[in-house]
Image (cartoon, rainbow, N blue to C red):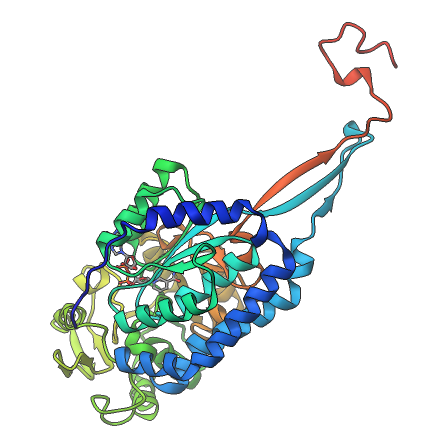
Length: 458
Ligand code: NAD
């Protein structure tokens, strides 16, 4: 893959134009916002085939997976928001304390202004467009910077967006780290970043120079825990799906698996079965299995194969960007594979005997973006939710919590700041302005404590 170079020199004047356009107030109009969301949906429909083909060409994404996780996801998000937006934009009447007698209280949502959206390569369409939906819904202008690792999708996003929107309203700026770095020197009103933890820190540091608010959707090591009481058949199926979809390159994929020693072997046997069932006997040629994004990323993953014992998979072809779905046993917490986010189709397995040990170990790590627990035991379920801090997750499933617009999605601690999807997207791109409307019909002297006559009224 050849990385290509752009420069951001033309962006500064464009940003000024967007700020000017925002100040006209056009983007705040509710009918305008709804119209733009509908135009976005129809242009995606028009380019749907091309989007899916591009995902296939760059990441070998299977068609159905590409549809559901990228395009279909975005349609659902638009439908959900369009149906509710009129209600969300209304000022909300709040209660007022007796001390403020005569006045009324409101909260007005208002757009930030011009937002910068920086997106990664793993779901290169959805992760650029889903935040944009929130930005439009809340009445903002937007500059989108897609990942340079999926250049064809970056180009397609540029085409789709420039055909649909005035560049003073929404625009795509293509490029890599240099362009991103340049963009981050500029004064946006909000930055929405999806990507790795180290780059998240760079983004936040740059944003701090202008006190620009940030939303950071980051990553980390998300555990899948399988307790003795779990339904093993479903645990196997759902962990295999969560881990190996998109060849493990999903921010909320189970990164590693902790399994009770009494159920480890039967669980692994079932997982081997479902790997073949879902992705085919030969994943090198399978149409149902994705590629690693680049040879460099493939090499990084292959280095992990030296750890522990391979109990399933382990084959690879770096030139073809193929790594077989792999399960590793005999892993310890001190191994390198347990020190960074894997972000690929390699699942290290650690066995445990006591759930308390599991809780203690996870607590020593950074707070994960997701956590998955497979257990029929209500006490253990509640304990995990109460005692471990993580972005979000599922009981007896993996990844599905991201796919409902009713649940805000985001991390905590090192896995991110802020959340989005559904109403949370509207909230993320809005400032909530508190307004007290005071009466002029009377005035109580008691409210002016420095006034010598303050108490005379009573
Ligand atoms: P990345 O952080 O390398 O890159 C993300 C974006 O930042 C790209 O557009 C890139 O051009 C830009 N960028 C890279 N280096 C930069 C720098 N030094 N300065 C400024 N900008 C820079 O991430 P990635 O490899 O594209 O994606 C994988 C990571 O993203 C994983 O850690 C994964 O967990 C995370 N992720 C998180 C979510 C989420 O919703 N929380 C979703 C997908 C991926």
